[in-house]
Image (cartoon, rainbow, N blue to C red; front, side, top):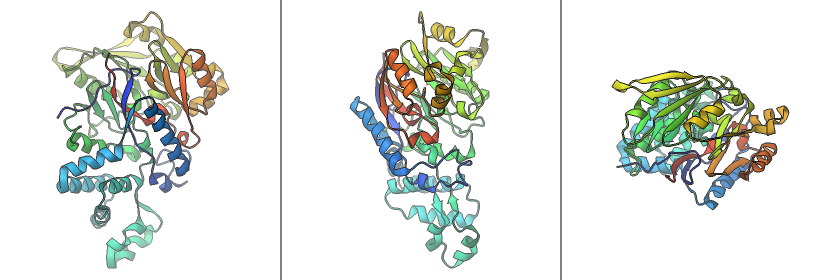
Length: 410
C-alpha cells in the first residue's frame, strides 16, 4: 500500500506530524546513566508531559493532525499478528544487549505477558528493571538476579520524544536511520515495524535503512524544496551515509530532487545536528546560530550516470548558497539571541533556533528563549510559545520533537 507521506518543504503548511509523548522512560534515568543515555539532567515527568501536551495542542489549534508513535507501532504489531509480535520482542530484546539466553527468555515472557499492545510498547520504551523479572525467573531468581539488584536489564529509551532523529520524511519517502550511539539505536526499531506491517505505512519508500554501516540522523536532514535537500555533515551524520542517501534519492523517479547540499557544521555536542544551528522559518528567512554565519564548507551532490553521484565543494557562503538553490534574490539570516554573545550561547543551549514551522512565517518555539523569540517577531515571524522547563533538558526543540508526515504540496 502507498504510504501516507508527503514532505517537500520545511515551511509549507503542516498537515500531519508524528510525536512521542514522554513516559516512564524518564523515571528510569539516574545520575549514573545520564552520560550513557545522552542526557544532562533528569526531567520531571509530570511537567514534561504537560509541556508536551501543550505543544501537541498548539499544533492541533493550527489545524495539524498529531499521531503518536506508540499507537502506530501497536497498530503495526496487531496487524501483523502473533508471529510479528514474537519477532518484534525477540529482536528488541537482542538489540537491547541482553546476552544471556536465559535472561532473554525471561525478558520475553515478562514483556509478552503484557496483553495490551500499547502498554507493551510503552514498557519496551521505559525499560525493564531486574526486580520486574523475579516471578518469571522462578527458582533460579537469586542466582540470576542477586548481583544485578537495582539495575536495568533493558535500558530506557528517553530520547524517543525527539521523533525527528530516528527517521526523516523526504518527498514521498523516508529514511530509517542508523543512530550514531548505541544508546539510541533501538529508537528506530518501532518505525521498522511500522514501515513493514502498518496497514497504512507499510510499503513506504526508504532511502536509508537502520542496518546500514554508516550513521545518519534526522535532525541533520531538511527538505528545502522539491529540488533541494540539505544535510548536516555533523557529529552524528557521516559522509558515506549522505552519499548513499543521495544515490537512492536520485534513483527514485517519482520525485524531482536535483541537489543534496551537505553543510559541514562543528563537530560538538551543542551543535549535534543541523537543526540545532539552522531552521527555515519563512520563504526567505532562516533562524541561525552565529557559528553558521561563517560556514564556508558546503558540498553539492548531484546525480551522475550509472547511479553514482558527483560531489563538488561550493566555495560560497551560506547566504549565497541558499539564495542560489532556492531561487531567491535575498535570504535573511535571523541570529539566535539577536547576535549578542551571552544571549546567543544561553539560548543556543536551549535550542533557540530549533523551530518547527507550521506555515510560512509561523513557528513554534520554547518560551524560555525570549531574546531569540523577540528577534524573530521583529523580523515578521509569528512565534507560538510553548512551556519548556523540562522538555528542554533533553537538548532538543520543537523541530526535534515532531516529524512532519504531511505538508501541503505547492
